[in-house]
Structure formats: structure tokens, C-alpha cells
Image (cartoon, rainbow, N blue to C red):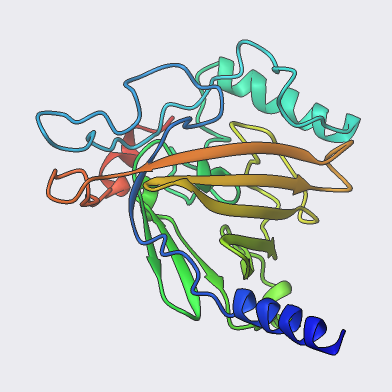
Length: 252
């Protein structure tokens, strides 16, 4: 019996110490912006090059109302969405942070229309999006956010991760309340984001996202994003400078 327990314990230790997968590389989303159907296919080469960035990504204008699979809002935040919708339908960029060259925030950043580079070492993983040069870091060394950090929320928030086998589990807190969950769905500063990120197969990265917000959402919202890794030497494995400010004068 003791020998069996020892063998099981040794096997658990070996599994716990296994080398995590390497996510490093440049990826393009297979389902950018959730159900967005306009524009070219994500990552479509343009004469061998990635799509040229523009000052504003092709987000919905809210004219079609809300889809059943979008986050379920409380009455207070549904009223906020209706206000945003009216301005969007009128052609205003007042509530469009992307058009004003601001970061898309989380988890919207993980729905980027352009490419994303993943850089990884044992202590952290960095996600860099070509869209507005957005950046987020996931710390893997067990650190926690200080109260000072929590009192100064950011677009990307503060992300803490750990490995469960071949899956990266991430919790993000400290998020600003003036960004959007998906499209133009508002949220509060109480929102948190939980992710389970893994390689479904070589070169195919999956991010299962769960958003919780006790003030803005009637229930947690879940979505799945998938990204395909660019092949080395094709030109698509190099992100381009976004330089959003060059087009900000066009924002209304």
C-alpha cells in the first residue's frame, strides 16, 4: 500500500513539474469581434503582407440591436448601452475608444481584428496586439496586485496566471469601468475576467473567457476565441506599427 501511495505521489510530482507549452509567436483571430461579419477575413494577406491598420477597427454600429449571445445587462447598464447605441447609429465616435486611439481594454483586446504577438518566459506571458499597440502581461510567479495598483485601474487590468497541466489559467482584476466587454457592451469597475488558454492543436490557440460583473451583468458571460499561428517567413509573422494617432483627426 505504501509503495502504491509513493508511486502515485511521484507521478503527481512529475506531472506538476512538467514543462508548460510554449505559446510564443504571432497569431491572427479566427473569430474577431465575436460575431462581426464585415470587412476582410482576419489575417488575410494583402500582397503577402498583413492587412493595413486603420484609425478605427470595424466595430458594430449598434444599429441591429443586441444579439441573444451578447452579455446580459442589468437595467442600469442596458440604459447605458441604449445611449451608446443612439450615438453610434448617428455616426458619432464619442463612445468609441478605438477611434480615439485608446486601448481596447479587456477582454475586448482578445477580440482584436489584427495580429497578436505572444512572448513567454517562466515568470510572465506578454500579449501584444497590433490594434492600437495594446499590451497586457500575465504574471506567473505568484505575485498579487497591491492596493495601490487596485486603486488605479487600467485598460488591460492586472493579470495573474498559473498552469493547470497544458492550460494557462488567468484571472484579471483592476479594470477600468469606461471600456467595453465586447463590441459596445458597457461594464462597471467591478468586472473581473477569467481565462483558460491552451493549444487545441499545434498552431491553434484557444482562449475560453468568462466575464463576471455583479453590477453590470445579470449573469456571467462566456465566449471562446481562437487564433491561428502565423508561419515563419511569410511576412504575416511580423506585426506592423499601428500609429493610430495619424488618423485621429478623422474621428467625429
